[in-house]
Image (cartoon, rainbow, N blue to C red; front, side):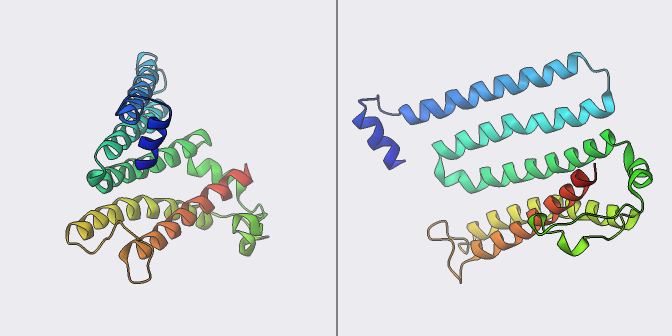
Length: 206
């Protein structure tokens, strides 16, 4: 914030220009995303798929609004981040369901890929699965990895807010060995890795 204020002073911009810019950007983002959502609702021809698309698009105004609030009121940034994390979990679950729908459902995926060897690589962290035949068990495991993230994300976000309220979650110098944010980040990274590997497995097979 101090750097932005200094930049504004150097460029002779009016006081509070950074807040005005953030809120204008957030409002434009919300208007565009709401127009996109209303367009789907007006042409509601495929309810099963468009319902999921609307859920995914709904996270855009949530992100825009919470980010603007967090910028204007930094003391509430952790709460706004928790709201965004919960919205992100909803989006990932909705995207997973939409992906399965586009591919014809779990049964169709298994019929198309059953017995096909997995071409795993170290770049996608699937090298240990290389040559393993694709099966219903692997599909179920990959789905569980994604759903696991959808549960971990809102749970840990709520835990962050509670730890902050009790004074054990420092926002300054958070990545110290004895600080809670370091371990929270490790849990987040584990959850991210699990659901990304799942998506890569499906994308690589199709």
